[in-house]
Length: 460
Image (tube, rainbow, N blue to C red; front, side, top):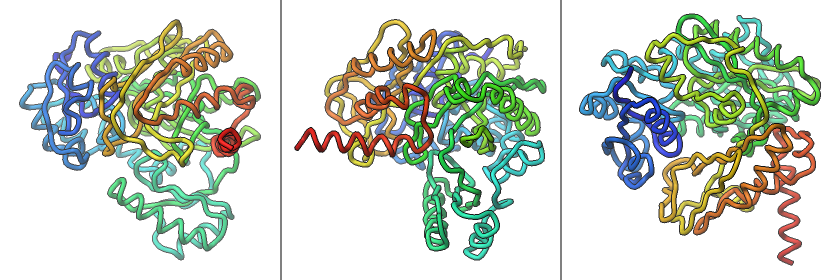
């Protein structure tokens, strides 16, 4: 059993990991930047060490400082959470070389899925469908134009590194392709330190469906069902649910096919610990591999709710070498769960980030309601990091009950002093198409136009 774990992250995921550790009687060490001194994870951990200034490049991304903090506090392991260094194979290697267990996939598994372009090739070799596109990094303008001509417009330009919608552009002709190519490269370099991009066929009006995978380090890999993450804005998720209403209502056989495909990719990479295999699905039920997220996902919560398990605890136990009964029958799915990501943003002003001080904070409760957050009344949200300030999760015996609880919980969620996405998420939960489970990745843009019109009419 680990005696002490350092959490190389911040915000709600750091709080989430601390809670799991407390239930396992494992002591915790929080690291924080100067601007995060009053964050909840610092207050809840057994120990806390400042590792630098506000910029993540001077704090949460500093491998040497994280290792120094780990050695000073004599920890057994490091949990990277999501984002920052969670998918950095070099960081995992450094941890192991310092005799500190990295709670996540091995460096070898991460290297096998090093970036999205390499992952595409692995999926192709494993016999998993991928969208037509380039075999790797696009070299120059001519390569971009030749690839687009070969596969046909529209195309998607994607950063080979990172995630969160950064470095992604859709092009419908040569002019928008060249512009998108350079914009994607510049954005990717700033966000991930890697300007590499690749091009693939853009699937119009798709669903974004992912599968939670779990490997025990002994060659056993299973999936714990799917999550539908199609409610997005600028390729960043706003609402997630499980099971997928698209699969439940139209293509139930897809669950088995996509689950097998997810396991094939994980086995090909010799994957261990928790991860997520992401797919896009077109209107006729054809699915294509997108990428593997080599870490715990933001939306892991809804899988926990329907399977009745704790994925963070399982991550820790796998890292400790604990023998696990890994069989799909050990994680039966029951009921329905929905998550809303609560962001400090103004959804009616192009989702502009709204950092500032929270004046009053009241989180909802009641049966079937869960809140994962690190904020509180009086907490100041910095402009330095991601704008997500919490996650609201509901569970019900069926989708209707989960939706009704989410609508009720959103109406109870009170945050003053800043703008949040809560009003827009209330509109999502009341939308007839969402209620019927009829939506694609374009849903937010379509709904936002209607909500904006209603607001303008009300103000007039």
